[in-house]
Length: 333
Image (cartoon, rainbow, N blue to C red; front, side, top):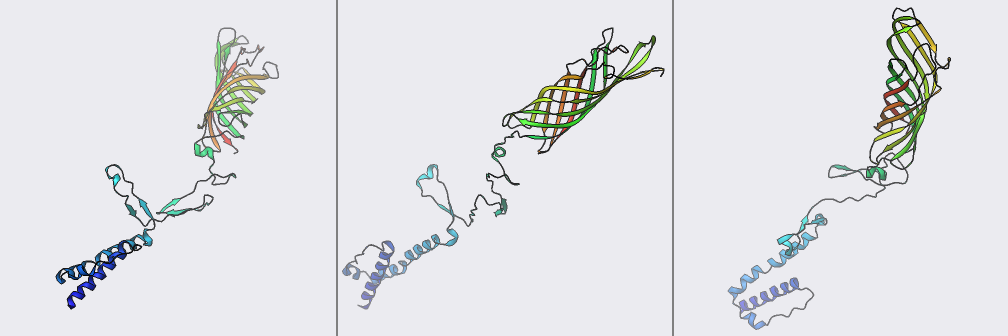
């Protein structure tokens, strides 16, 4: 009799525990006592041993879901044949850091430095503007210094029997200014350049009824004003220059020397009115702006004017200039 009451009480306890776990809000109707009472003690004992396992596993899963280290989880996408299966949550202890966009401090994330890129209305040392982000190189007003070195050529027909050619070293230095005509592609470039060249050549010629070998040289000083249109693409540091250049002669001396040193003539072509006051040239060139302050240029100058006229001592009529130069440009900003 005692065994029957013991089995009956055990069955009631198991049923109550299972009802609370499955549906806590629902009301559970207790089973009839008669059928439970007829259960043999040998069959009731195993039920008493297995019943507590179900609620223990359930409560353990709940504790795992509420664990602090699992608050951050990354969902795993399901594709294809596994689309019908529930999405599994991948547990991770990764920390997520948030920072305002106006903060300039650096943070550490997984051992690597992370720096915020932001847009500002005020230019600062670490500001990146939208042109830089898009890879565009705008044209801005600037000025600076330029210097060139190259070869100068004087050539022309002396009107008698020989084509004159003189060549030598040319250098020029000066200041320039750049005025943008649009945002990225076109600008006007001008400046003031001081130029000097010395060209020479040797001829077998008759001078004052004496035939011999004579060396003729010109030493010229000019002030030039290039008037150039500078063109480039929006994302390029390479630009092209084209335009005209008037040059104003400051000094121009001719020297004639014979090989036996009996003839040595030195005259100023401006003083005897044999030198034109202004020369005109066409300029072609290109350059690369290496960085904000330094650039490199190459230019070709083609003279349009005859520099000399009415000089009877030596046949130098109809001479015009050509020049090839390379140089560097230094920008103020």
